[in-house]
Length: 161
Image 1 (spheres, rainbow, N blue to C red):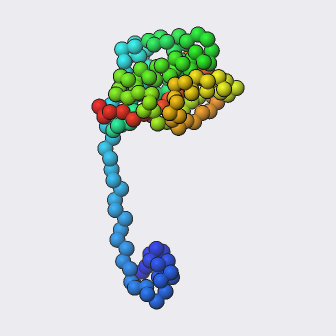
Image 2 (cartoon, rainbow, N blue to C red):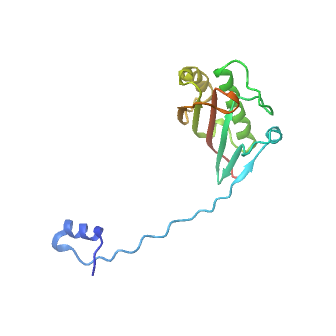
Image 3 (spheres, rainbow, N blue to C red):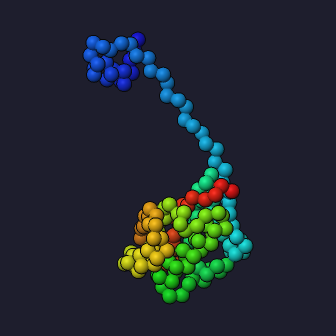
């Protein structure tokens, strides 16, 4: 009988107490069907964007990157990085609420910054919106949609739709 590496290791550790071990094959991977539900709102439909504002998979909501544009327009909130950050987070909050979630249920965010030197200014806004401190990654970008200074995407728990 040919023994697997695991069985050989067990024999080496057990010495003479080792008996022939027949390992059962690993169980097949569990396949969970994924049924995304695409979410849009009347204010984003008019922009004819080539992606959904969010996709639901089970009880998770994946929110597409949001810039600090005023709802229903491509116009950025005036006032620089802090104003754009507030607006991007407000846009995310609206998407989450439309889809059975909230900022309090955000588990992970990814932040794209046009200028990493604006990191401290973004953080001043961030801590007021996310006192629960979800996981976060951030990176600098060489350019963002519509000339934005910041883009934020997130994953949140949500009531299954």
